[in-house]
Length: 88
Image (cartoon, rainbow, N blue to C red):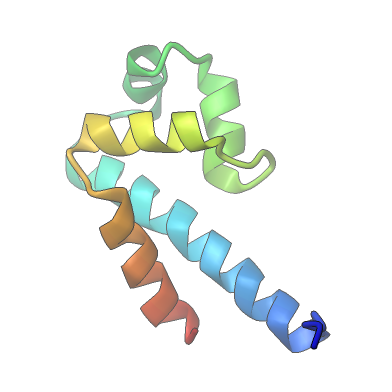
């Protein structure tokens, strides 16, 4: 039987993705790393990193994992926390 994506599911998924972005940005800020510095570490422009952090652009797997590595954060833990907070 197929799975139907309804509006409620879309909202939960949007919340999940927003929580992931929020978790990594908060991690950066807690470590007192400015966006410009993080962009340099990731070899991105600051404007590109800003688009990732605000959700204008979706993180690629590679950028997301590199971002987490720079913060010494486990990506799986970020997903788990986002799942809990999004009510999944």
